[in-house]
Structures are given as C-alpha cells and as structure tokens.
Length: 106
Image 1: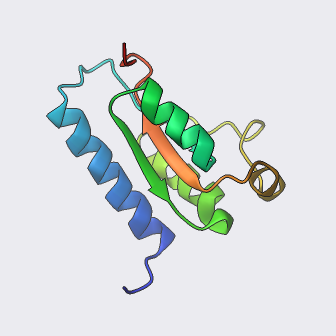
Image 2: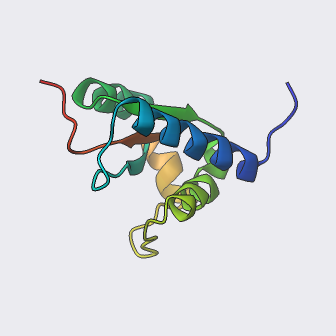
C-alpha cells in the first residue's frame, strides 16, 4: 500500500466520523471527543462508548494528526494540554480515538 500523508489520513478519518455520525443519527449538539490512546485505553473507550472510531498510526505523527483532525472538526486546540512526543512515548500512545461522550453503553 502506498504511504499516506498525515493530511490524507486526517481527511479520511474525519470523513469516516461524519458518515458514522449520520449513520447513528447524531443530533446537532452532539460532538466527537477526539483523544490519543494506548491499545488498552482504546479497548476501554470502545467498551464504554458506542460508536467509537479509532485509527492506528505511527507514534511520531500522532500530534500532527490529532491537530489536523481537531482543526477539521472545528474544535479548539489547547496548546497547554496538547500531547508531546515525550508523553506519547511514555504512555505508549498509538491510536486516535473518537467517541461521543453522550453515547455511553449501558
């Protein structure tokens, strides 16, 4: 498979989020929470929320990918709490996970 640019990955991921929101009937006030997660955290989020959409990517591109996704979703990017390369390595983050906080599984 050809190497994908981070911009292309972000565009496809946001497209998938929009399709998923339409498919599950998101209301206008429902938004995606987008976060970085380790494999264990991803599994926990998928068990807690439905739908949850995840994307595995290279750790060195996670910060940029998360920023582009949030930008395309018109979400604020808080530079103070934004993850950095050191945090990604320490916490073994490798996934971008989106979920709607209002759609918890029972």
